[in-house]
Amino acid sequence: MNPRGGEGAEVVYSLRNDSTLANMVLNNIGEQGQIKRKVYQRRLPENPNKDYYYILRETGNTEPILVEYGFIDNAKDANKLKNNLEDYVEGVVKAIADYTNTPYTPPGGSSADTYTVKRGDTLYSIASKFNTTVDELKRLNNLTSNTLKIGQVLRITSNTSVPSTTTYKVQRGDTLYSIANKYNITVDKLKELNNLTTNTLLIGQELKVPITGSTDNDTGTTNYDTYEVVKGDSLWSIAKRYGLTVDELVSLNNLTSLDLKIGDKLKVPNSLSKKTYTVQKGDSLWSIAKEFDISVNKLKEANNLTSNLLNVGQVLIIPN
Image 1: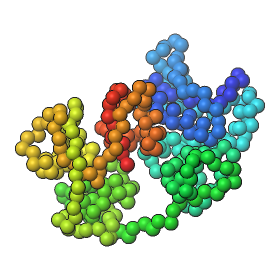
Image 2: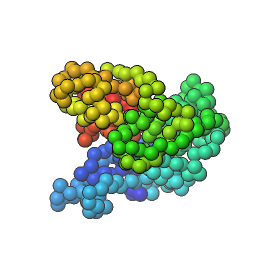
Image 3: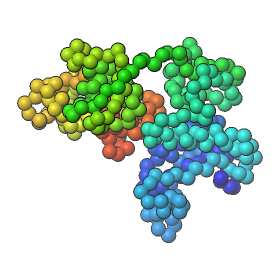
Image 4: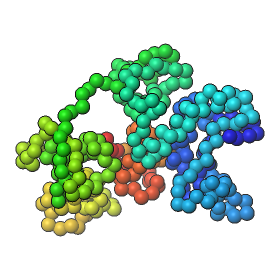
């Protein structure tokens, strides 16, 4: 808690990290009704290269944050903390789960069919609480605007049945793409069925696959899109982006050389194609991820990014 009569929440992050997680945490606390003040870093006066707070300075190669939910000597904040602290804390948990691309289950689970709107609720906060999206909530409830009324009852889940599945044992040479193609589904759907967070497979690993899918590589049909090579691309990075091996990408395009030139056009599976977004002035990975309702880590993984730096005009792939 903060002292000295201010109002609202603040998040302090370490000098060795960027502000992405801190911003996500503060935003989620704000969605729960608290005033958002700022995220910031604080330096040790006698050594500006070190963090002021011990918990940030002496925690090794981690990404710590210091969350100050409000000002204990402010009557408004004290009342909010008394009544809403658990909601603020749950907002932090949700932000960390999103940031680390970890499945999030709200308190009490997410199996409830309906939710009654309370004071301070927004479509975004409700969607976050039940691990869904604003668009899905609007679709389920036939909403044409984001306006909610206290006491309004919203459907949270649909009654869509889960497709029947069987198991497939990974063989030598298998990839997510080859297995997905065999069963006529997308790589994203295959990963979702098996709660996979990477494209790595192990020989002998058992995967859930649709029981109604094709079991013959030659029976399904796959449509393709064209990918234009840009600066920094390699066969490995493009193959990884679309869930292929380099050999599969080479075979798909009948390549006789592993060299690529800017402007070269490659055939890639359209079942895995991603929509794109062109970076604008003022954009950050966090703001773009929030706009498309995905995590920062997922956005970085889809674009093979090793840092959070963006350039105006840069084209990003937005994963489904």
